[in-house]
Length: 391
Image 1 (cartoon, rainbow, N blue to C red):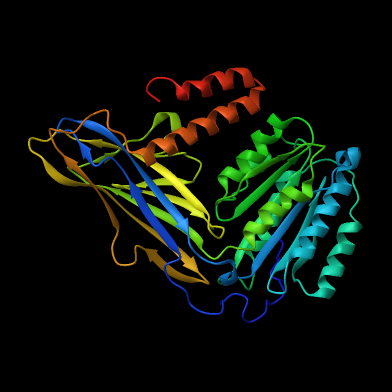
Image 2 (cartoon, rainbow, N blue to C red):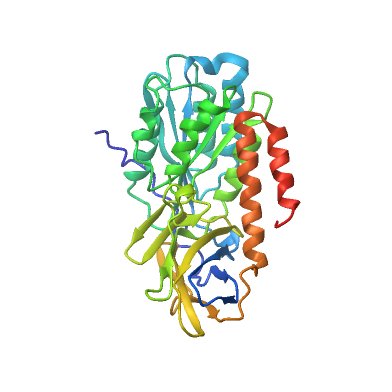
């Protein structure tokens, strides 16, 4: 196995921040106030908000994994990639580090994690300019090498780390890259050119299996620089890292329901990695951009009871790191969600915050379906249903 423990030492203050900050995550819960005495189901919305300032951020370790296979010579794709990468280099600061990995038939680490000094920026721009297209598409080795660069760092404490992966073609061995374990890092993938569905199947799966990464499709007539800029702006504002939400059901009072339509996930939208541990569900969000909000809906089964009382139906608490230090929110004890069990509860009562998030997810699902099938007329009809009776 190749060793990549050759990363340049970052500036002494780039992983510690200017001061130790606390309470940079706000956790809120929304549910119905009342529930009937008979057995029933309830939906609880948990909302996690980053309240940090971009000025508090730690240094970024970014690995760009770039497709330079033969098809990148078509439609000026390689030129667009070079332009986007030069933009990224120009926007990184002296507390940040960048490594470039290229892949075609083989993967090649073009440079170690370099501190973004003025001299390093010129060196990296020259490396980008000298990239040439040729060969096949060995995405698996490119992704693995990019992740290895981060895994084998000597200097990692308190630093934000991510991979950006861009490819325009199908793999030599279809699906081979999905065997690469990307769970520990955020991998942001960009599919370039025609055949959106094929790219979404592979690149979308890579991103969703990673820790907070996302997939972006870039048409031939779109600017790759703009898409890179959107992700980079977020990465350069990250303060809160390794955010995990732990939701606990209350034995005898509630049980978390596994939703079959979410492929076994206990919380919607099901795009965040989740694991069940006894009466708890742990949801991993990865890193948060400054001001970013994440929402999940938890489905609960409340048992039949013989008398009214104020029930604790779930508890929730976040854990996260800032500059390498561990914190929790709420700090002292988990947040509790209470629902009054009573005979006067109306089964039709709905919490507006929960309904708003359900509607948002409905729209997202239908738009996603339309983008995959190009059947926007059917999608529009289904969206209109949200304004009909009962919505």
